[in-house]
Image 1 (tube, rainbow, N blue to C red):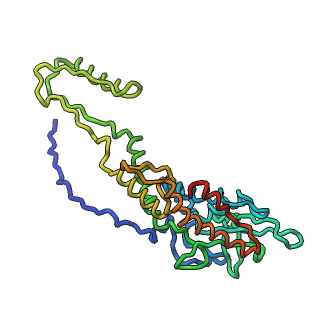
Image 2 (cartoon, rainbow, N blue to C red):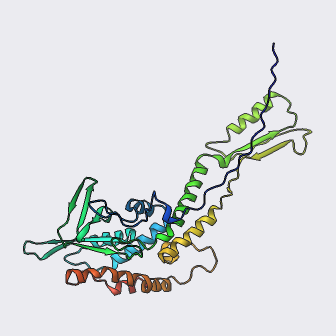
Image 3 (cartoon, rainbow, N blue to C red):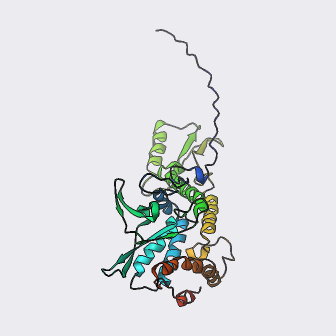
Length: 333
């Protein structure tokens, strides 16, 4: 038998720092906010349209605020022979999400407009000399007839080829809200919130008693869990049996605070009253009269948004887009 001398190496001290918060303008993988680039066939959007599409589903209050505007605009829209309610709803939806909306004028044989058809903003691109393309794929595109596309743009300070959604400043809060939700879901799914260590330093009468405790703990999970456990230890000490939790049910991640703060940021970016989204107030006084909030929302947000879509009327030469003012009044706005 040989005896080996075990030598231990002192543990080294490792220090690291987390990265600084990444501003929205530097998040290249999602929002490539750069000058509009010409790729040889069309201008690239300054912000990834695929990223905006995925960001729409990132947080419930972000998506709900957009849907509220879309639904009210669609409900107050008066259908026209050239533009149906369904087509207008799609135009409004894409304009709010992407900051760009496209309408194609489909002419009859005599040259009179027969229909205004929305072109999906995610796949429509602008080329030089006011030409527009629809991308079937990267190597295949359809060029629209000259002058047949109306481009509705949310103005941007940096360029004038494409529009940029006005809620862009609130996306970081939407991403933080999503991250907090995903963290909490993973936290519960991995089961770490239920873990603990049962530490016993009292003398147990026999190994059979230890096995009985082990069996009782194993049977306490699954169906019929949250059972009580009785342990009898005669002449036991004060700290003879200890239950040491591995982690707490309420993790120290400030989940509720993060959700509330990011919700307020998103609602501020969209300027939508929380009452219209079904948000429950935290205080006893509530959010106030929902009718008054809806009236202010209609005057300050919906009516200016309606006037944006009425730019189509000047382009087509007749009043195609018109809204029913009585619909807003009937809804309390």
